Image (cartoon, rainbow, N blue to C red; front, top):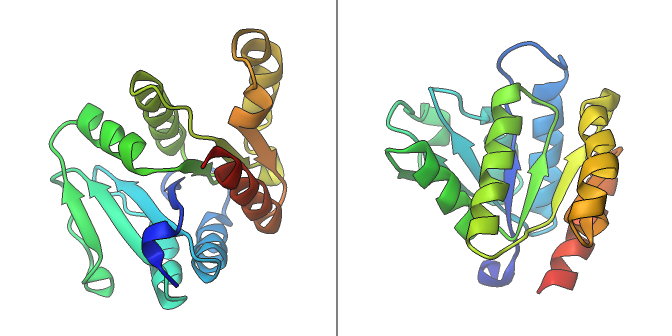
Length: 185
């Protein structure tokens, strides 16, 4: 497969902090599923937090992964060979993610990963882009954001239902994402 034509998907995930105990498993399943369908994955690594299960599963399935990181990140030996771009400032990192990604995926995770997602989406808006966001709403992880989207985004963001969507499974996540990316190209 010609990977230069494959969509670049920024996946926001973290297995640190309180939250869903299945996060590592969800990351692994997502990495495998997306890689087998040809997606290129880009992710953020900051403050020593790296979505290792996502990256290792995607690579094991033959996927291509790139990391945008701060200077605190040291890749474990299992991730040797993964492309990593180190940028000093958080705004720089979020702008770079916004520049590279065709779409964003939010997996159930920490507040830090949700904050990075919205920071990247805002950076894309400043670049004149609105890549779609699809959130895996497993165990109602994004139920509050779903309500916010319906109540607050809907009147102020034309086509918000295309900009922000929610999925109940990894298969549904991929189906929504691939449709939105193909419509946007």
